[in-house]
Amino acid sequence: MKNFRRFIRTAVLLTGVLMLSGLLLADAAQAQSSVRPPGQAAPLEEDSGPSNALGGASDADIWRQIRGAEDMGGPDLPAAPGRNVPLYEDLMRELQGGIAGGTSSTAANSRLIQMLGEDWRHIRRDYILPYAGWVLAGVLGLLVVFRLIRGKIRIEAGRSGKYIPRFSMAHRIAHWYLAASFIIMAITGLIILLGRPLLAPYIGKDATAIMASASLQGHNLFGPVFILALLIMIFRFMKGNFFQWADLKWILKGGGLLGGHASSNHYNFGEKTWYWIVVIVGLIMSATGMLLLFPWVTDVLAWHQISTVLHAGGAILLIAIALGHAYVGSIGMEGSIDSMLRGEVDENWAKEHHDLWYEEVTGKKVDHKTGAIAQANPEAAE
Image 1 (cartoon, rainbow, N blue to C red):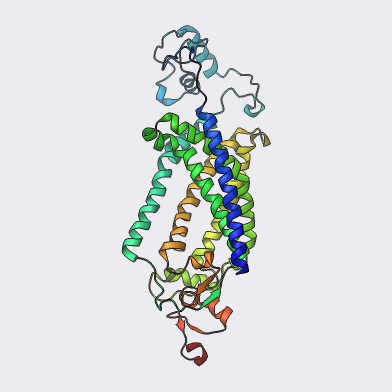
Image 2 (image 1 turned 30 degrees about the horizontal axis):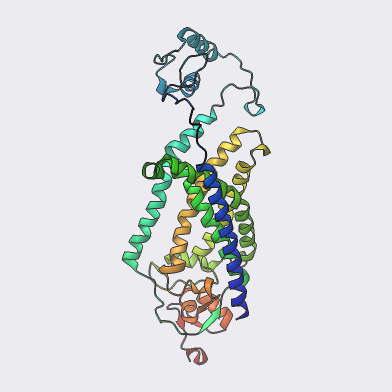
């Protein structure tokens, strides 16, 4: 009962922190929504391009042409209103002929154009943005199909009514602390990454901009919180998550899906794999996230561009696997959620899913072919 009260107090404290953070995000969104152009401001002409020495040409088109982009059709751009064509052609010949350019940025290393930037945009625009949403939708679809075919994984022997401890209060707090911060980071990150293509067509650009701005502030705010929660989880759950010979047998039996009972220790192969994915990918995302949050750490542009790709790719991977983890650990498997809510599990659940661990903590022998208590042990059979 004492542990339960401690758990309630901790949950209330975390809830208060999250609610306070939500209010701060709401204030930021309100401030963003209150920004409006002056009433006497002159309207801008659409698609006019910036006014510069080359006339009304688009800067983006000019720089793509300078680097010889294939889709611009050679050294000549279509005529644009106000363009100084002779000056533009002279600039093309000089730059494409190898003229040196001075820059005010040490990150550019005195190069007028950083060629890797176009490759980075290509990866983000043509691979990350189009496929990120489909990957997550595909995982959700697979979970629905699995549920329809396999149904809920029941305790075959039914609940015994007897429980054995599985996770301490410290383990559960570490788990839910990381889970809460991860959910916030996942939602805000997806809005930042996919808000424009997925939300803007339905709620409008203004609303999407407000949500993206608030999400960016929340993402930056909870980033260090996520890193702290990750480090706590790594050290708290490391014991028992190293691979053993029993995991090989678990793999060969497909976790029991390929027939027969798959024995496992405190954590099975799937859980151990998930742990190490969280550790490795989580640390990579933490490092890249801190670099993006504090870009002055390095002035090498390539590091920032690589960080955005790794950060986005790692996020999609973690979210996709987390969906499966959340499903199995909650509504997908009977009795599984008890370990993280009560800290204890039903004995029959332990025998069927973690029989080697059950033997270790109870001293009772289990038939590893079925997961039932071996009848050869009279005391265990009672």
